[in-house]
Length: 347
Image 1 (cartoon, one colour):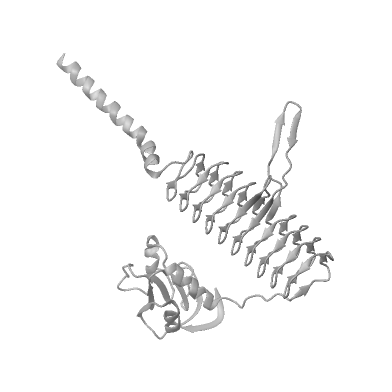
Image 2 (cartoon, one colour):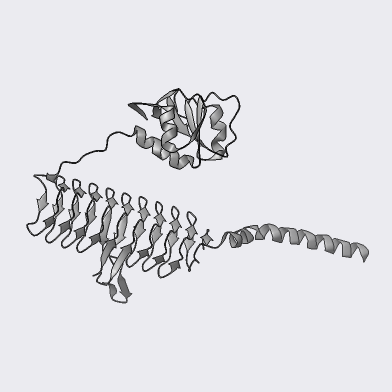
């Protein structure tokens, strides 16, 4: 990313609290990956498997970890050495980031805001948005174009609701929540009773509650509870295209990665990581700090701190035992054949 900003390398070093190896007089004009960086860019090495790119990169400077063995004759003019290169480079990105977009306070002329809705101070409501009766919008919240806020829904302060988000009736959104475009919150849970005379819809009369400091990606769906609440607790981060079914509870500071799905009434503990495309069965519990590998299918409870992978999901040790079983059987067959041949040769 090229900008009009020029920052001396020593200022970057001070910002990330690192140390410099090499030329401490150069100036940096942009940020880029190792493979795309130009002669005035700064890049970073977050994973040692990409160490070979140091030999070919055109970057002027590279942020690296303390344990990286640097090449002796590198074209890189300066290395910024720090404890956590990923975290440090995030700080560098902020230094070069364009100015934050400021949204005009007020209600766009094409927005529809019911007279019984309560709108806080410093709120921005974009074009063609709908704020239904008895809804509440907290101070300094931004509602971008095309957003629908249902009746009696409450949204806290300092939130950003991006374009074309739908938040249906009676839902509760906390403070400092970010919801990206296309997400639907409060749609009916998948509740039906099948019988010989057809399929009967079961009323979904609960709500969705999203606590403070949550970020929800684009095109996610979070269903309202059958009764009670579907609950997303403080600090949870949800990637794009994630589905959370009715009456699910997601614990504080958990991360749900793209295309993962949580079936109804599952309980996800604190600090859990559910990787991409993993599926969690309904009515089970994932313990605090557990990690679920991508594409795994979890059908039973997972203990706190455990790791699970595969379908059906199991511990890494169980997975390796099952994975190695065919090879073990082949070895046993070979051994049995050798023993049979020895017996026959002696008979």
